[in-house]
Length: 78
Length: 147
Image (cartoon, rainbow over the protein chains, first blue to last red):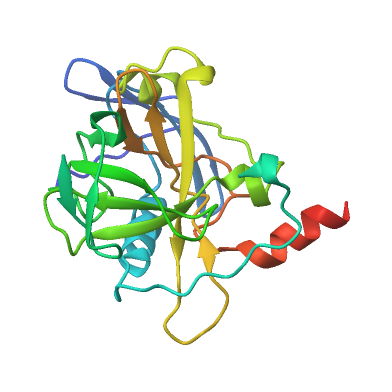
């Protein structure tokens, strides 16, 4: 792993088209700005992990999942 | 064509029910072709893998129980599936049915977004901390109804 020291407003370039800027450092929190091409997905690691974990939980295990009747829905909602 | 499904045996489907996720669902990146099937219990639907009949999800239109749901997703991510206009998008939330009998939940943090025009789809990650991976569908539907 490459470890770099940066100050506020300094940047890190990743390849030709990803630019990471340290916007603010406040106590234990760092605010980071990321400029990346549209096809590069950028998100917090926890978000990725949470969604992945939830997908695994959502995988239907039996052949007949028990689903609740949703009351109060009118026909047009369906 | 006929497909084998997890929950409904062999089902006949039309081509337009098939969606392609080039990057799969998170944690299931290798599965790309799915069929969108009506379930016997609307408004729930099935998202059934065409590559593995054991791989299937239940999903729901999130706006049914959260009329205030909104997606804050980078345009670039939507370009990935060729989505130019929100009118061409279909949005579903994957549903989790806990084995211990606790309330079923929907994942509003990682919605499935389908481009109706080309049937390309992706699982997005929404930016707002308001939307979590577990939303109690029945409780939030009731809360929405009372407003």
